[in-house]
Image (cartoon, rainbow, N blue to C red; front, side, top):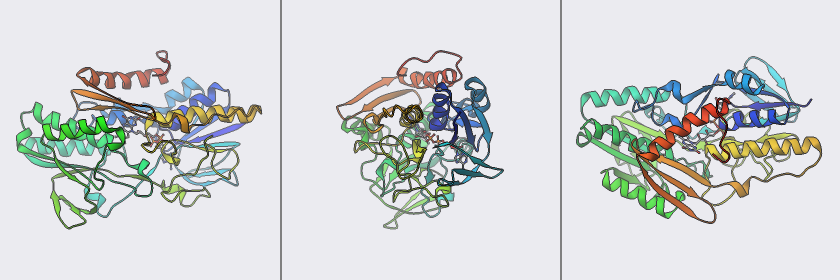
Length: 387
Ligand SMILES: Cc1cc2nc3c(=O)[nH]c(=O)nc-3n(C[C@H](O)[C@H](O)[C@H](O)COP(=O)(O)OP(=O)(O)OC[C@H]3O[C@@H](n4cnc5c(N)ncnc54)[C@H](O)[C@@H]3O)c2cc1C
Protein backbone atom coordinates (compact mmCIF):
# COMPACT_ATOMS: atom_id res chain seq x y z
CA UNK A 1 0.00 0.00 0.00
CA UNK A 2 1.28 3.51 -0.88
CA UNK A 3 2.58 5.53 2.08
CA UNK A 4 1.13 8.99 2.34
CA UNK A 5 2.68 11.56 4.64
CA UNK A 6 0.53 14.53 5.64
CA UNK A 7 2.38 17.35 7.40
CA UNK A 8 0.42 19.80 9.57
CA UNK A 9 -2.47 19.10 11.93
CA UNK A 10 -4.79 22.03 11.15
CA UNK A 11 -7.99 22.19 9.07
CA UNK A 12 -6.16 21.09 5.93
CA UNK A 13 -3.98 18.30 7.34
CA UNK A 14 -6.69 16.78 9.54
CA UNK A 15 -9.26 16.72 6.73
CA UNK A 16 -6.73 15.30 4.24
CA UNK A 17 -5.81 12.50 6.68
CA UNK A 18 -9.47 11.63 7.27
CA UNK A 19 -10.36 11.64 3.57
CA UNK A 20 -7.23 9.69 2.54
CA UNK A 21 -8.11 7.01 5.10
CA UNK A 22 -11.57 6.78 3.55
CA UNK A 23 -9.73 5.71 0.35
CA UNK A 24 -7.83 3.18 2.49
CA UNK A 25 -4.36 4.64 2.10
CA UNK A 26 -1.64 4.14 4.70
CA UNK A 27 -1.63 7.63 6.19
CA UNK A 28 0.78 9.24 8.66
CA UNK A 29 0.12 12.70 10.01
CA UNK A 30 3.06 14.69 11.38
CA UNK A 31 2.20 17.68 13.56
CA UNK A 32 4.30 19.83 15.86
CA UNK A 33 1.35 20.12 18.26
CA UNK A 34 -0.57 17.18 19.70
CA UNK A 35 -3.85 18.98 19.13
CA UNK A 36 -5.66 20.76 16.36
CA UNK A 37 -6.25 24.39 17.24
CA UNK A 38 -9.63 25.51 15.90
CA UNK A 39 -8.79 29.13 15.08
CA UNK A 40 -12.39 30.29 14.34
CA UNK A 41 -13.33 29.46 17.96
CA UNK A 42 -10.24 31.10 19.45
CA UNK A 43 -11.70 34.63 19.05
CA UNK A 44 -13.68 34.05 22.25
CA UNK A 45 -10.69 33.08 24.43
CA UNK A 46 -9.46 36.64 25.18
CA UNK A 47 -12.88 37.81 26.44
CA UNK A 48 -13.36 34.66 28.53
CA UNK A 49 -16.35 33.50 26.45
CA UNK A 50 -14.58 30.19 25.70
CA UNK A 51 -12.01 28.11 27.58
CA UNK A 52 -8.78 27.34 25.76
CA UNK A 53 -9.48 23.61 26.11
CA UNK A 54 -12.70 24.02 24.12
CA UNK A 55 -10.85 25.45 21.09
CA UNK A 56 -8.68 22.36 20.71
CA UNK A 57 -9.18 18.80 19.48
CA UNK A 58 -6.65 16.12 20.52
CA UNK A 59 -5.02 14.59 17.44
CA UNK A 60 -4.50 11.20 19.14
CA UNK A 61 -8.29 10.80 19.49
CA UNK A 62 -8.71 11.60 15.78
CA UNK A 63 -5.94 9.18 14.82
CA UNK A 64 -7.64 6.34 16.75
CA UNK A 65 -11.08 7.04 15.26
CA UNK A 66 -9.83 7.38 11.67
CA UNK A 67 -6.95 4.89 11.97
CA UNK A 68 -4.11 7.05 10.74
CA UNK A 69 -0.63 7.05 12.25
CA UNK A 70 0.30 10.12 14.26
CA UNK A 71 3.78 11.52 14.87
CA UNK A 72 4.30 14.58 17.04
CA UNK A 73 7.42 16.24 15.68
CA UNK A 74 8.46 19.48 13.98
CA UNK A 75 9.26 19.42 10.29
CA UNK A 76 12.46 21.35 9.61
CA UNK A 77 13.02 20.66 5.91
CA UNK A 78 11.27 19.10 2.93
CA UNK A 79 13.53 17.44 0.35
CA UNK A 80 10.87 17.05 -2.31
CA UNK A 81 13.05 15.56 -5.04
CA UNK A 82 14.53 12.98 -2.63
CA UNK A 83 11.07 12.27 -1.21
CA UNK A 84 12.16 12.95 2.37
CA UNK A 85 10.77 15.05 5.22
CA UNK A 86 13.29 15.96 7.87
CA UNK A 87 11.93 16.52 11.37
CA UNK A 88 13.65 17.46 14.63
CA UNK A 89 13.68 13.83 15.82
CA UNK A 90 13.74 11.75 12.63
CA UNK A 91 13.55 11.72 8.84
CA UNK A 92 10.60 10.21 6.98
CA UNK A 93 10.18 8.98 3.41
CA UNK A 94 6.93 8.89 1.44
CA UNK A 95 5.22 7.85 -1.77
CA UNK A 96 2.93 10.88 -1.61
CA UNK A 97 3.32 14.04 0.44
CA UNK A 98 0.54 16.47 1.38
CA UNK A 99 1.93 19.76 2.68
CA UNK A 100 -0.47 21.48 5.12
CA UNK A 101 1.73 23.33 7.63
CA UNK A 102 -0.14 26.63 7.31
CA UNK A 103 1.55 29.95 6.60
CA UNK A 104 4.29 32.01 8.21
CA UNK A 105 3.58 35.54 9.37
CA UNK A 106 4.84 38.79 7.86
CA UNK A 107 6.76 40.55 10.66
CA UNK A 108 6.82 44.35 10.71
CA UNK A 109 9.48 45.98 12.94
CA UNK A 110 8.63 45.81 16.63
CA UNK A 111 5.96 43.12 16.22
CA UNK A 112 7.00 41.77 19.64
CA UNK A 113 5.11 44.75 21.12
CA UNK A 114 1.85 43.33 19.79
CA UNK A 115 -0.32 40.36 20.64
CA UNK A 116 -1.72 38.06 17.97
CA UNK A 117 -4.72 35.77 17.82
CA UNK A 118 -3.32 34.12 14.69
CA UNK A 119 -0.01 32.67 15.82
CA UNK A 120 0.91 30.40 18.71
CA UNK A 121 -2.35 29.28 20.37
CA UNK A 122 -1.10 30.18 23.88
CA UNK A 123 -0.96 33.83 22.86
CA UNK A 124 -4.76 34.06 23.14
CA UNK A 125 -4.29 33.50 26.90
CA UNK A 126 -1.79 36.37 27.11
CA UNK A 127 -4.36 38.66 25.46
CA UNK A 128 -6.93 37.44 27.96
CA UNK A 129 -4.60 38.31 30.85
CA UNK A 130 -3.78 41.77 29.49
CA UNK A 131 -7.43 42.52 28.74
CA UNK A 132 -8.43 41.43 32.25
CA UNK A 133 -5.78 43.81 33.69
CA UNK A 134 -7.19 46.70 31.68
CA UNK A 135 -10.77 45.86 32.64
CA UNK A 136 -9.69 45.76 36.31
CA UNK A 137 -8.04 49.17 35.99
CA UNK A 138 -11.35 50.45 34.58
CA UNK A 139 -9.98 52.35 31.57
CA UNK A 140 -7.63 52.00 28.63
CA UNK A 141 -6.90 52.16 24.93
CA UNK A 142 -7.09 49.07 22.74
CA UNK A 143 -6.06 48.95 19.09
CA UNK A 144 -6.74 46.04 16.76
CA UNK A 145 -4.96 45.95 13.41
CA UNK A 146 -4.56 44.02 10.19
CA UNK A 147 -1.36 43.63 8.17
CA UNK A 148 -1.12 43.33 4.40
CA UNK A 149 1.07 41.32 2.05
CA UNK A 150 1.30 43.51 -1.08
CA UNK A 151 2.52 40.51 -3.06
CA UNK A 152 -0.61 38.48 -2.33
CA UNK A 153 -3.87 40.12 -1.13
CA UNK A 154 -5.38 36.67 -0.42
CA UNK A 155 -2.93 36.39 2.51
CA UNK A 156 -4.48 39.30 4.40
CA UNK A 157 -6.91 38.26 7.15
CA UNK A 158 -9.47 40.81 8.35
CA UNK A 159 -12.24 38.62 9.79
CA UNK A 160 -10.59 37.68 13.11
CA UNK A 161 -9.57 41.31 13.71
CA UNK A 162 -13.15 42.57 13.22
CA UNK A 163 -14.52 39.79 15.41
CA UNK A 164 -12.01 40.39 18.22
CA UNK A 165 -12.69 44.12 18.18
CA UNK A 166 -16.48 43.69 18.32
CA UNK A 167 -16.20 41.01 21.03
CA UNK A 168 -14.04 43.31 23.17
CA UNK A 169 -16.53 46.14 22.61
CA UNK A 170 -19.32 43.82 23.74
CA UNK A 171 -17.40 42.74 26.86
CA UNK A 172 -16.75 46.36 27.85
CA UNK A 173 -20.41 47.29 27.32
CA UNK A 174 -21.53 44.34 29.45
CA UNK A 175 -19.30 45.60 32.23
CA UNK A 176 -20.54 49.18 31.85
CA UNK A 177 -17.00 50.32 31.01
CA UNK A 178 -17.20 51.10 27.30
CA UNK A 179 -17.15 54.90 27.72
CA UNK A 180 -13.83 54.64 29.63
CA UNK A 181 -12.12 52.86 26.74
CA UNK A 182 -10.87 53.99 23.35
CA UNK A 183 -11.18 51.28 20.71
CA UNK A 184 -9.43 51.65 17.34
CA UNK A 185 -8.92 49.68 14.18
CA UNK A 186 -5.80 50.18 12.03
CA UNK A 187 -4.71 48.79 8.67
CA UNK A 188 -2.48 49.81 5.75
CA UNK A 189 -5.30 49.21 3.28
CA UNK A 190 -8.01 51.84 2.81
CA UNK A 191 -10.91 49.40 2.78
CA UNK A 192 -10.25 46.28 4.86
CA UNK A 193 -13.21 43.93 4.61
CA UNK A 194 -14.12 45.08 1.10
CA UNK A 195 -13.55 41.62 -0.31
CA UNK A 196 -16.51 40.37 1.71
CA UNK A 197 -18.59 42.37 -0.79
CA UNK A 198 -20.21 45.83 -0.85
CA UNK A 199 -23.09 44.97 1.48
CA UNK A 200 -20.91 43.42 4.18
CA UNK A 201 -18.40 46.25 3.87
CA UNK A 202 -21.14 48.87 4.34
CA UNK A 203 -22.32 46.98 7.43
CA UNK A 204 -18.79 46.92 8.86
CA UNK A 205 -18.58 50.69 8.50
CA UNK A 206 -21.92 51.08 10.20
CA UNK A 207 -20.61 49.03 13.13
CA UNK A 208 -17.54 51.30 13.48
CA UNK A 209 -19.86 54.34 13.56
CA UNK A 210 -22.44 52.88 15.93
CA UNK A 211 -19.86 51.42 18.31
CA UNK A 212 -17.66 54.55 18.19
CA UNK A 213 -14.58 52.72 16.98
CA UNK A 214 -11.80 55.02 15.71
CA UNK A 215 -10.48 54.21 12.24
CA UNK A 216 -6.82 54.45 11.19
CA UNK A 217 -7.17 52.99 7.71
CA UNK A 218 -5.00 53.42 4.62
CA UNK A 219 -2.05 54.19 6.90
CA UNK A 220 1.08 52.11 6.34
CA UNK A 221 2.61 50.72 9.52
CA UNK A 222 6.22 51.84 10.01
CA UNK A 223 6.84 49.97 13.25
CA UNK A 224 5.38 48.99 16.59
CA UNK A 225 6.75 50.33 19.86
CA UNK A 226 5.92 49.45 23.42
CA UNK A 227 2.44 50.99 23.72
CA UNK A 228 2.19 52.51 20.23
CA UNK A 229 1.66 51.87 16.54
CA UNK A 230 3.85 54.22 14.48
CA UNK A 231 2.59 54.94 10.96
CA UNK A 232 4.58 55.87 7.86
CA UNK A 233 3.89 59.60 8.36
CA UNK A 234 5.29 59.24 11.93
CA UNK A 235 1.85 59.74 13.49
CA UNK A 236 1.22 57.45 16.45
CA UNK A 237 -1.66 55.45 17.84
CA UNK A 238 -0.99 55.03 21.56
CA UNK A 239 -2.56 51.93 23.11
CA UNK A 240 -2.05 49.81 26.20
CA UNK A 241 -3.07 46.71 24.24
CA UNK A 242 -2.25 46.23 20.55
CA UNK A 243 -3.72 43.15 18.89
CA UNK A 244 -2.32 42.61 15.41
CA UNK A 245 -3.29 40.10 12.73
CA UNK A 246 -0.24 39.90 10.45
CA UNK A 247 -0.61 38.90 6.82
CA UNK A 248 0.41 35.37 5.89
CA UNK A 249 3.78 34.75 4.25
CA UNK A 250 6.15 31.84 3.59
CA UNK A 251 6.29 29.24 6.34
CA UNK A 252 9.81 29.24 7.80
CA UNK A 253 10.55 25.67 6.63
CA UNK A 254 9.98 26.57 2.97
CA UNK A 255 13.19 28.62 2.73
CA UNK A 256 15.47 25.58 3.13
CA UNK A 257 13.26 23.23 1.10
CA UNK A 258 13.26 22.59 -2.66
CA UNK A 259 9.70 23.78 -3.30
CA UNK A 260 8.54 26.21 -6.00
CA UNK A 261 7.31 29.36 -4.26
CA UNK A 262 5.43 32.46 -5.39
CA UNK A 263 6.95 35.88 -4.72
CA UNK A 264 4.74 36.10 -1.64
CA UNK A 265 6.19 32.81 -0.33
CA UNK A 266 3.37 30.34 -0.94
CA UNK A 267 3.74 26.95 -2.66
CA UNK A 268 2.92 27.02 -6.36
CA UNK A 269 0.20 24.51 -7.21
CA UNK A 270 -1.93 23.66 -10.23
CA UNK A 271 -5.72 23.40 -10.25
CA UNK A 272 -5.45 19.80 -9.06
CA UNK A 273 -3.41 20.92 -6.02
CA UNK A 274 -0.22 19.25 -7.28
CA UNK A 275 2.95 21.17 -6.49
CA UNK A 276 4.33 22.54 -9.74
CA UNK A 277 7.15 20.48 -11.24
CA UNK A 278 7.18 17.81 -8.50
CA UNK A 279 5.81 14.30 -8.57
CA UNK A 280 3.28 13.04 -5.99
CA UNK A 281 3.44 16.17 -3.86
CA UNK A 282 0.34 18.19 -3.05
CA UNK A 283 -0.02 21.45 -1.11
CA UNK A 284 -3.25 22.62 0.52
CA UNK A 285 -4.64 25.21 2.94
CA UNK A 286 -2.78 28.34 3.99
CA UNK A 287 0.58 26.92 2.79
CA UNK A 288 -0.50 26.95 -0.85
CA UNK A 289 -0.80 29.85 -3.25
CA UNK A 290 -4.52 30.41 -3.73
CA UNK A 291 -6.04 31.08 -7.13
CA UNK A 292 -9.65 31.86 -7.96
CA UNK A 293 -11.89 34.92 -7.91
CA UNK A 294 -10.28 38.31 -7.11
CA UNK A 295 -11.93 38.41 -3.65
CA UNK A 296 -10.46 35.03 -2.62
CA UNK A 297 -9.08 34.64 0.89
CA UNK A 298 -7.31 31.88 2.81
CA UNK A 299 -9.99 30.39 5.04
CA UNK A 300 -10.63 27.22 7.01
CA UNK A 301 -13.46 26.02 4.79
CA UNK A 302 -11.23 26.58 1.73
CA UNK A 303 -8.48 24.51 3.41
CA UNK A 304 -10.98 21.69 4.02
CA UNK A 305 -12.28 21.84 0.46
CA UNK A 306 -8.70 21.63 -0.85
CA UNK A 307 -8.01 18.66 1.43
CA UNK A 308 -11.00 16.72 0.11
CA UNK A 309 -10.04 17.41 -3.51
CA UNK A 310 -6.36 16.53 -2.93
CA UNK A 311 -7.39 13.17 -1.40
CA UNK A 312 -9.74 12.52 -4.32
CA UNK A 313 -7.04 13.39 -6.89
CA UNK A 314 -4.42 11.23 -5.17
CA UNK A 315 -6.86 8.33 -5.37
CA UNK A 316 -7.53 9.08 -9.05
CA UNK A 317 -3.78 9.12 -9.69
CA UNK A 318 -3.22 5.85 -7.82
CA UNK A 319 -6.10 4.00 -9.44
CA UNK A 320 -5.05 5.29 -12.86
CA UNK A 321 -8.49 6.70 -13.70
CA UNK A 322 -7.00 10.23 -13.82
CA UNK A 323 -10.40 11.89 -13.66
CA UNK A 324 -9.05 14.82 -11.63
CA UNK A 325 -11.08 17.59 -9.97
CA UNK A 326 -10.00 21.24 -9.89
CA UNK A 327 -10.24 23.38 -6.74
CA UNK A 328 -10.42 26.93 -8.17
CA UNK A 329 -14.08 26.84 -9.14
CA UNK A 330 -14.96 26.04 -5.48
CA UNK A 331 -13.17 29.02 -3.93
CA UNK A 332 -15.58 31.42 -2.25
CA UNK A 333 -15.89 33.52 0.89
CA UNK A 334 -17.93 32.18 3.79
CA UNK A 335 -17.92 33.60 7.26
CA UNK A 336 -20.07 34.03 10.31
CA UNK A 337 -18.71 37.27 11.76
CA UNK A 338 -19.41 37.20 15.47
CA UNK A 339 -19.66 40.16 17.85
CA UNK A 340 -20.14 38.28 21.12
CA UNK A 341 -23.93 38.51 21.15
CA UNK A 342 -24.93 38.00 17.51
CA UNK A 343 -23.31 37.55 14.12
CA UNK A 344 -23.49 38.38 10.45
CA UNK A 345 -23.52 35.56 7.92
CA UNK A 346 -21.57 36.46 4.77
CA UNK A 347 -21.25 34.38 1.63
CA UNK A 348 -19.71 35.66 -1.56
CA UNK A 349 -19.12 33.71 -4.74
CA UNK A 350 -18.78 34.76 -8.36
CA UNK A 351 -22.54 34.90 -8.78
CA UNK A 352 -23.77 36.76 -5.70
CA UNK A 353 -23.20 38.24 -2.28
CA UNK A 354 -25.37 37.16 0.63
CA UNK A 355 -25.34 39.06 3.91
CA UNK A 356 -27.73 38.13 6.70
CA UNK A 357 -27.69 39.83 10.09
CA UNK A 358 -28.39 37.23 12.76
CA UNK A 359 -28.79 38.95 16.13
CA UNK A 360 -28.46 36.46 19.02
CA UNK A 361 -28.98 33.33 16.90
CA UNK A 362 -25.81 34.00 14.84
CA UNK A 363 -23.63 33.85 17.95
CA UNK A 364 -25.15 30.53 18.98
CA UNK A 365 -24.94 29.21 15.44
CA UNK A 366 -21.17 29.79 15.45
CA UNK A 367 -20.88 28.18 18.89
CA UNK A 368 -22.93 25.23 17.64
CA UNK A 369 -20.66 24.92 14.61
CA UNK A 370 -17.66 24.50 16.99
CA UNK A 371 -19.40 21.72 18.90
CA UNK A 372 -20.57 20.07 15.67
CA UNK A 373 -17.12 20.34 14.03
CA UNK A 374 -15.37 18.56 16.90
CA UNK A 375 -17.99 15.90 17.51
CA UNK A 376 -18.55 15.05 13.86
CA UNK A 377 -14.80 14.79 13.16
CA UNK A 378 -14.53 12.45 16.14
CA UNK A 379 -17.47 10.48 14.68
CA UNK A 380 -19.54 11.00 17.83
CA UNK A 381 -22.34 12.40 15.68
CA UNK A 382 -23.01 11.99 11.94
CA UNK A 383 -21.94 14.72 9.54
CA UNK A 384 -24.66 16.89 8.00
CA UNK A 385 -23.88 16.96 4.24
CA UNK A 386 -22.59 20.39 3.17
CA UNK A 387 -22.20 21.72 6.77
C1 LIG B 1 -8.29 33.88 14.81
C2 LIG B 1 -8.68 33.27 13.49
C3 LIG B 1 -10.03 33.11 13.19
C4 LIG B 1 -10.41 32.53 11.98
N1 LIG B 1 -11.73 32.39 11.70
C5 LIG B 1 -12.12 31.75 10.56
C6 LIG B 1 -13.50 31.52 10.29
O1 LIG B 1 -14.38 31.93 11.06
N2 LIG B 1 -13.81 30.84 9.16
C7 LIG B 1 -12.85 30.38 8.29
O2 LIG B 1 -13.19 29.74 7.29
N3 LIG B 1 -11.54 30.60 8.52
C8 LIG B 1 -11.16 31.27 9.63
N4 LIG B 1 -9.82 31.50 9.88
C9 LIG B 1 -8.83 31.01 8.90
C10 LIG B 1 -8.52 29.54 9.14
O3 LIG B 1 -8.34 29.29 10.51
C11 LIG B 1 -7.26 29.14 8.35
O4 LIG B 1 -7.45 29.45 7.00
C12 LIG B 1 -7.01 27.66 8.56
O5 LIG B 1 -6.64 27.42 9.90
C13 LIG B 1 -5.94 27.14 7.61
O6 LIG B 1 -5.77 25.79 7.85
P1 LIG B 1 -4.36 25.09 7.62
O7 LIG B 1 -4.54 23.67 8.05
O8 LIG B 1 -3.89 25.37 6.25
O9 LIG B 1 -3.36 25.84 8.58
P2 LIG B 1 -3.31 25.86 10.22
O10 LIG B 1 -4.67 25.84 10.79
O11 LIG B 1 -2.43 27.02 10.50
O12 LIG B 1 -2.60 24.51 10.58
C14 LIG B 1 -1.25 24.28 10.36
C15 LIG B 1 -0.83 23.08 11.16
O13 LIG B 1 0.52 22.75 10.86
C16 LIG B 1 1.24 22.57 12.06
N5 LIG B 1 2.63 22.96 11.80
C17 LIG B 1 3.10 24.18 11.51
N6 LIG B 1 4.43 24.13 11.34
C18 LIG B 1 4.81 22.85 11.49
C19 LIG B 1 6.05 22.17 11.43
N7 LIG B 1 7.19 22.80 11.16
N8 LIG B 1 6.05 20.85 11.67
C20 LIG B 1 4.91 20.16 11.95
N9 LIG B 1 3.71 20.77 12.02
C21 LIG B 1 3.66 22.08 11.78
C22 LIG B 1 0.54 23.48 13.07
O14 LIG B 1 0.79 23.05 14.39
C23 LIG B 1 -0.90 23.28 12.67
O15 LIG B 1 -1.42 22.12 13.25
C24 LIG B 1 -9.42 32.10 11.06
C25 LIG B 1 -8.07 32.28 11.36
C26 LIG B 1 -7.70 32.85 12.55
C27 LIG B 1 -6.24 33.00 12.85
